[in-house]
Amino acid sequence: MKDRATHGKSHRGRQRPPFDRIALLLQGGGALGAYQSGVYEALAEAHLEPDWVAGISIGAITAAIIAGNRPAERVERLREFWETITRQAWWDGDGHWCRTLLRGDAARGWVNQANAATVATIGADGFFTPRPLSPWLAPAGSLEATSYYDTTPLRSTLERLVDFDRINAGPMRLSVGAVNVATGNFVYFDTETHSIGPEHIMASGALPPGFPAVEIEGEHYWDGGLVSNTPLQWVLEGEPQRDTLAFQVDLWSARGLLPRTVAEVATRQKEIQFSSRTRANSDRFRRDQALRCALSRLLDRLPEEMKSGPEMEVLLPAANHRAYSLVQLIYRAKHYEGDSKDYEFSRRSMEEHWRSGYHDTVRTLRHPDALKRPDGTVGIRTFDVAQDGRE
Image (tube, rainbow, N blue to C red; front, top):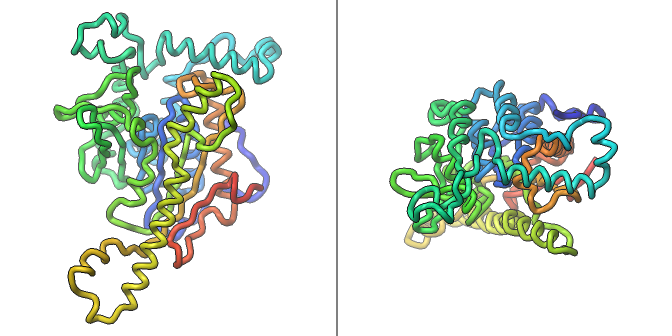
């Protein structure tokens, strides 16, 4: 599945960086989620196991598999999940004639579209199946009238691959985001406040109108990506506040080229919609954290007689001298991947996405500046190997 680089400094066997907490933040992105598994594999090899994993949609599934298994079994379970839900079509095989006839971006783009059309028609094993009757013909108010696919197979897959007792009793914190259909409010199901089951993971990935809403305690929930596709703010501003090293794994790049065709417009629209402006959000958090650090230093210098009163009751909670280091790992789509890349569940694309996540993380961890703590004046630093230095 992977072709590991062997040159240069190894990313393996690192000592734990000087942070109180390691967090793994996982975006939604459907079939692109195999990239997250490659990222986790490289982190595990470097002994950078997260203390807190948060995800939305496919990121919630990845997070549940990580939190719901012993460290030695996590990569194997992730691979089992992806090999369950992907398939290899006859026209996308490894035979010599396939490689000869289907060379070049144009041919690969055709293959990907054919694979995506197949998934849209027959579903993905262990994930979702098309309903036998169109929702337009189903009785109003029925579950069948609100979605094109049945996600019951996903529940069975989660129950087979995830130990939910371990999630709710284990040392790793898990958070998954969803949207309340009735109120439109974004909510997080978190092991600090909830007992997590398969339904919470499924709710986080219930993207309409493809998938039905998931009922939890009398309320119905859809995919968290409808409001925010990135759990960045939840983790960085979560309590208790601690020095945090966060690996932010984005499946959609906010930056891209000007579209030249209608197909490219559809692709770019998805990228902008689901990237959730993560870079802008991280820049805003940097500015806010710089203010919190400055406020904390200023309050420390006040004389004791000024450290009481109603003003201090407002200012003290806003002061924060914690250190945050945000490592960004962003999947950058190939030229032949179109707007169907998030539901193109072919084995070949899955393996490519996994390898991309693995190698991007290896290159990042080998960089000497990747895991550095921020200085005391700002309190936060970001690192993206694609911008801050390559080998």
